[in-house]
Image 1: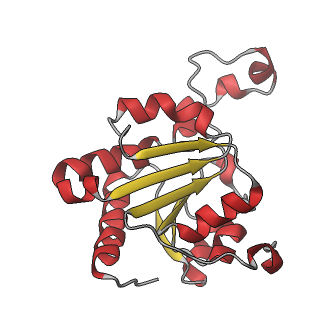
Image 2: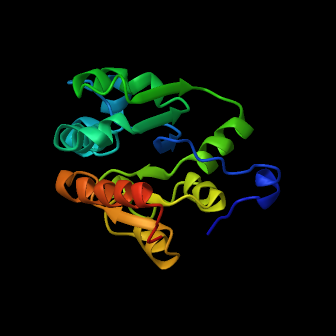
Length: 201
């Protein structure tokens, strides 16, 4: 359905950091507004369950990490989460809410090559989609960049095309976007593989 330009990755070498590094590039489409504005009302979003949009955010990822860091002190000390892109403008409050300030690096807008370098140099990449009809048949272009980087992907997505692609290409793992238990298990597995120098992907 789409692809990545292999030439974009020429000259980029994967230099994995000493810390377990989780990367995300892009934005999020959740809203923290309790009442939609006029434009959103015109589109009918006021009739949609706003909780759906919470799943297109790092909220449940942050909850999973916060719980894991409480259970596994070594993981807190050895993990960094890097965000690039406009999504950084929306999630500072969530970072503080879950007490992850010392683990989350919000880099904001960066040059394209720097973004690709971050993808290559991470140990795990996060891809998130919301539950509900908004995600039906939606395959974000970043998925193909993730595949081009060759870094394992944790797709926090409902059943559908994205989950199928990740599983069929053995590119990583899939967990429901709001299932904290499943997200924790996937992160625990990825961290264990980082610690042991192995990977099942």
